[in-house]
Length: 352
Image 1 (tube, rainbow, N blue to C red):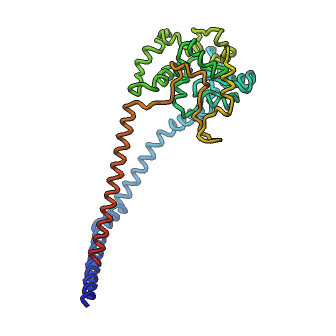
Image 2 (image 1 turned 30 degrees about the vertical axis):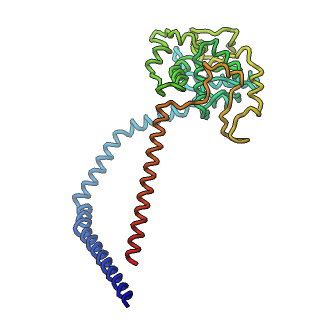
C-alpha cells in the first residue's frame, strides 16, 4: 500500500506539469493580445500602407535611373565573355579590327608538326589547351595536385639556360612560352620565381618585393642579372636568345604571342623510361591519382629538382596546435554528453 502511495506522489508531479503548460499558454495569449495584434493592426493601417507604397515607388524611381547603365554594363560583360580565351579581338595601329588567333594556331601547329608522342613543357596554365587542342602531352596542367612538381617546373624555367637544358632534355621534346606582352610568361615570372622558392623555404613565404628586385625587369625594360641569364627571359623576350645547341626555335605566331622551341639532344633513354607503364607510380592499378616519379637521370640535379615536400617547422607547429584544439573540443563535447546522460539517469532513478 505504501508503494501505491508513492505512485500517488508521481501523480502530483503530473499535476504540476499541467500547471506549467497552462502558464505557458497564458503567456503566449498575452503576447498575442498585447504585442502581435497591435503590430498587425499598425502594419495594415492606412498610414503604414501609404508608407509601403511610397517606399516601393521610391525604389522603382531610383532603380529606373540605373537601368541604362546596367543594360550597357551587362552587354559589355557579355561581349567580353563571349570571346574564347584562346582568341580575342584586337586593333592594329591603322585602326583595323582583327581576331588574334595566335594561341589556337600555335596549338594547331603542334598538332600538325610534331610526333604524337611529343611532350611539351610549358607553364601549367596552358596544360589543358596543349592537351585538348594540340593533342600532345603536357608536363603540367590545372589538375596537377603535386605542388613540388609545379615548383620544380618553375625552378627549371627560371634557372640559367645551361642548367635548365640539362633537366628539360630528360622531360620534354618541346618548350612553349607565351610572349608578346600582356599576360605573357614575363608577366608571370615573379610568380614562377616565388613558387620555385616556396618549397623548403624557412618562413613558408617569399617577399614579392625581394623577388622583383632580384628577378625582374625595370621600367625601362632592363632585366636584372638573374633575370637576364634565366631560360625564361631568353625564351620569351625578343631581346634575349638561346643557344642553338640547346633549343631551336621552330615556331613564332603571327602576332608573336607564342613561341615554340624544339629541345636539342633529348634523352631517348629517359623518354623510354617515362613511357614505360611499369614506371608509373599510382596508389593502385588503374588509379586516377598518380604522384608520379622522375626519370632516374634527374636524381643528380638536386639544385633544381627538389625531393618530396617537407613541411616547414612553423607550419607543422600550426597544424599540431590546430589538431590539439580539435581534440580538446571533441573531449569537451564528449564530457558534456556524458554529464547530460548521467543527470538523466540520476533523475530517472530518483523518480523510481
